[in-house]
Image (cartoon, rainbow, N blue to C red; front, side, top):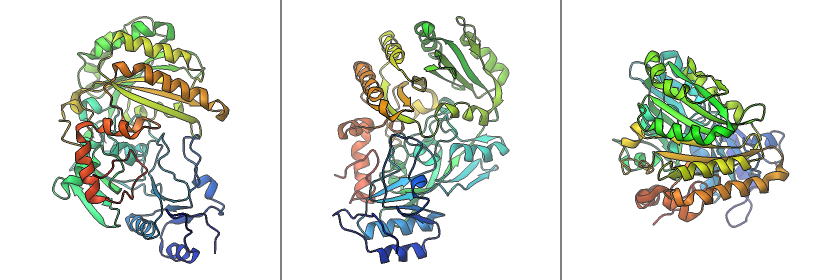
Length: 461
């Protein structure tokens, strides 16, 4: 029998015979700490996360998830859930408990007639985009193709199509969910509507979603790419960006970044994606492209899948990461100046600050219509430190926290759940705002013992 380090909540050990029995019935892969694949299996994208699970259960399907949940519950084990991509906070891993790993579950099926897409929870955005593109369709989701569809969607899901077609969670039709009791339910407007409401932006609090049914939209070629300016032009460029977006059509999503070029040169970036008629988009984007003296203008017609992959290399595997975010009351001149000040202090060329403008379709959804309550604020700022040397961690983390603190007088008190490395209990409550008490009621119904606790955790009443 394998030697294991699987600890129960009270510190006790699980009988190895029970683990061997579980392993025999499990169709996927069970990886224990003394096995050859363990070190690689416990690694995730963010190298700052270094945790040692007692067991990694790589599921092949929903039945495996149900079995793993039952095993963990009956043996009083801590559980984390790993999807298909990267979560900066590292909630996919736990020490001494069970990682229910869905990364082998990558199935995608497109119904072009109904314009729907069934996606298993281990798929990445790239996995889904590859299939939907065959039919000239796309689901609104993220900006990096290696992001996992499940974590992104459960936290809201913001991407290049957000202003025209809403958040990822706004495009869910149904979810297949394994509850804390190991039962399988379908959550939709017609079935378990309270759970369906909570899954749309409420994070991983209520169960394990094994698959999603999404609404897809006709999107093929977009007009997109970055315009790069010297960092010295940041103040003028960001003010112009703000003024331009005030009247921009919903087909256009534009983010602004204080980043570095691949050569390590500090720069100011305006990144656009227009998802309508290309000729019209050329006219719409003309005022942005004519402004100032850019170092490069790379906006061009390109497949939407290429837009989704454009910045994958900016988030390399096994880099160290620490992020925080804040929704802003407005993008005032003071906020722009603070952002530039702290971006200029960043010492790693992988670090940066990102301004995301929403509004449009996502902003028209009532805050109480889904668990994602952050509908009113139009601007989110993400403060992202990335570095390669673990010995530098303290200084990069301190800078992100200092920047976030400096922005608080201009912030709404809420943040993007998928875009933060840590948060206090009070910050979690503030993030969900007026929806928190309703989320607590859903939690009490579907997970009263807080079996699923490694998330932006909502406490039961």
